[in-house]
Length: 207
Image 1: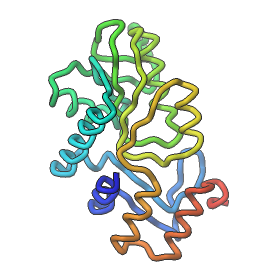
Image 2 (image 1 turned 90 degrees about the vertical axis):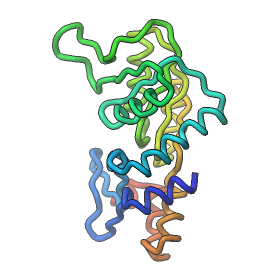
Image 3 (image 1 turned 135 degrees about the vertical axis):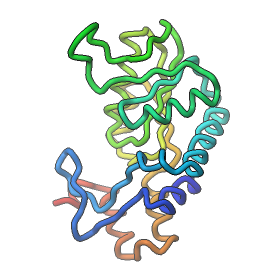
Image 4 (image 1 turned 30 degrees about the vertical axis):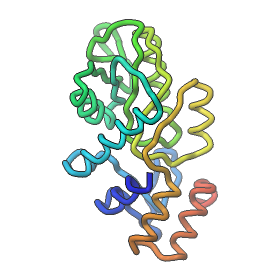
């Protein structure tokens, strides 16, 4: 959604730096960074995101019994969403506990339920898919859909999602972010072209 891209740009959730790029965990250098975690401290923006998700849920006809947040970025969003509709909420650890039952899923939860995962952003979608697999393994849950705020919209994320039999539902994608940055006067034409090159091939841009 273009409005969500504009929201992220307006509140400086999206940052650019073409001279000293941000470094991803993989080592890839990026001229752009989007930290959706910052949204949880902006009540008005937070409300826009939550409302947009519920509109998406209705438009797509998504059904769910429980909402689950990915650790750690998805946890507050799952709490906001579940509280709004008075549904149970869980969260999924990034790795099993090193003690006790060694679970990844926290918060109890009934078996064989339809669970909707809440994430903040998708890059490879790896953490989201790992959460889906944990819910399927530990609770025998049906997990087919994952909500997110932003997606880098990489081919790898789409391929991983298809293989895991889940559908990713971001509210906005990288191309809309680039457009919103340019419309807001935060990047010029040369920088817009640079971001387009990065979107096409992050590894090549980094090199």
